[in-house]
Image 1: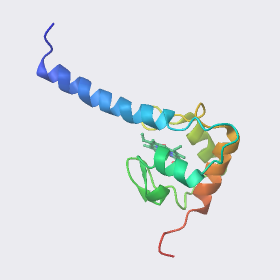
Image 2 (image 1 turned 30 degrees about the horizontal axis):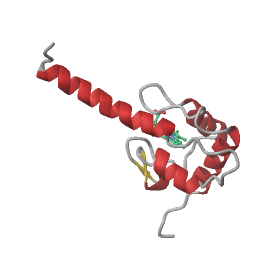
Image 3 (image 1 turned 60 degrees about the vertical axis):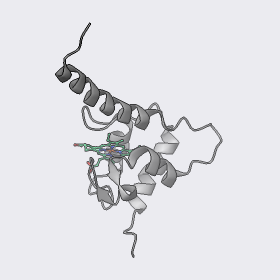
Length: 112
Ligand code: HEC
């Protein structure tokens, strides 16, 4: 079967997006008792869309100084948002997600 160029291009950009999503979702099956390095995990898993450790907007909004409450943040991380952000409730435990909420709350500009 011959694929048209257009089909290939459409397929390619869809699979690029998929690769990014899949990478975001599978990056962190952290072993149960391993230290959870939240800053590193954030950089590797979320940094693709939330730039500079969450300090700046990227594909996703800036998280530093978020006006949202903790429940909103926790729920966004767990459930993601259709077409915008993957859900992470399978990738992280509740305790790990709590640490990410704390990390986001504690974010400060890098240069004081
Ligand atoms: C594929 C890109 C992508 C990845 C990866 C991603 N996000 Fe997001 N995130 C978004 C987008 C886009 C939004 C805005 C969604 C909306 O409209 O509410 C968002 C919104 C959020 C919000 C809500 C911010 C607000 O003010 O509404 C939080 C908190 C958040 N992300 C945290 C995280 C964390 C933590 C991770 C990593 C575990 C992560 N995100 C990974 C794209 C991403």
